[in-house]
Image 1 (cartoon, rainbow, N blue to C red):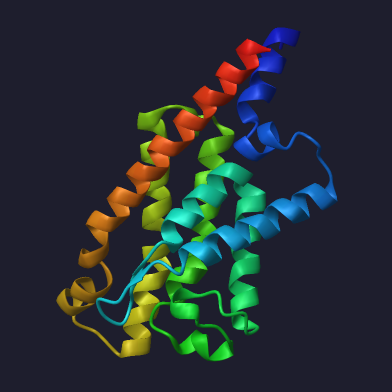
Image 2 (image 1 turned 90 degrees about the vertical axis):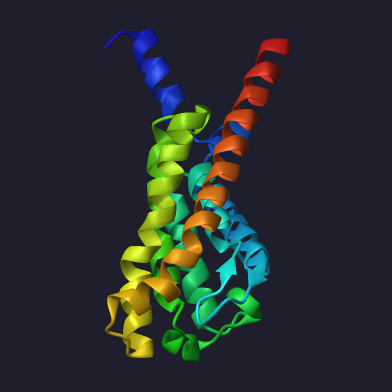
Length: 203
């Protein structure tokens, strides 16, 4: 691989956090992970109670954090978020927290957030977040990931076995909000990257 090609590949693998906070190190990563926890915690305050599983801003936060931090740090941030909440920090939807939340119908979705952040980060490391259509694809995949864990977990907690009832409570109400949140994230990241490139060209 030529020097130019190697440089291009390295640049494309940089996620937004690496571009905005270029100093790398353990303390930097810890700070970014902690910042990711704060972002998701704040967006968890945006909540619409429609049933046993609420519509919240958490999924948007997961996409923003995963894409900004990359696969590993994004997954670490959401793992930290989950553990901190179970330890009692009131950072889940509705200001909930504590080990009793393991029995909440929505806890499976929080477990799925780790995979969602990793998917968003994986896509960002391949520069998908710099192009609207590719960003939308990546964020839709990230949006779908929590359902793989969350829906069976919810059904188990609520003792549901009817697929129609499960879908009505845990899938259908979240499709349109999920697409909207993916669209918001897919609009934000290419715009931020365009601003970064513009600032670079002005230097």
